[in-house]
Length: 197
Image (cartoon, rainbow, N blue to C red; front, side, top):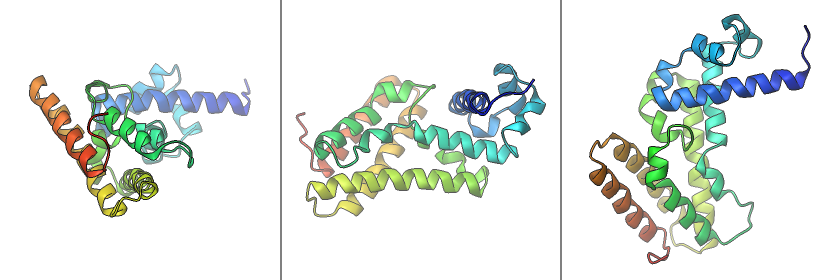
């Protein structure tokens, strides 16, 4: 049976979505191609109709995760209030809901600690994800006439990713919530946003 290009794209998208969920649940190093293909209703051999290798596959999975990440909240195409967009982004990123999800959310806290073990291609994609987030935050700060948009964006992006990693690692829910709340207050202040909103 011959399938059209749309069928192949839909199948590839389904495989990438399943893999993204598995990466969030188990980590990129534990991803099992055979298990993902079986869950998608495909044979292991069918994998190579979509991806040249496991490395290429993992890179595509990370790209998918980055495309679907909360950073898209910052990409208003020059439209909207920059302070409101930054506040909405920080409030969501440092929320208990974002911390607790295993099916969506930013891949950077999930994958940052694994990056060096997963190969240069994957590390470069993660670095581009951090760079994109930083550039978007800096752009909004520039629009707000912040005195140090690049340095502040770099430090705030580093803090929110680090805070999310630590809040997920903390087994005590109250302490985990405190990490998120303290970081949110710190980042909001440094970004020059209204702490009362």
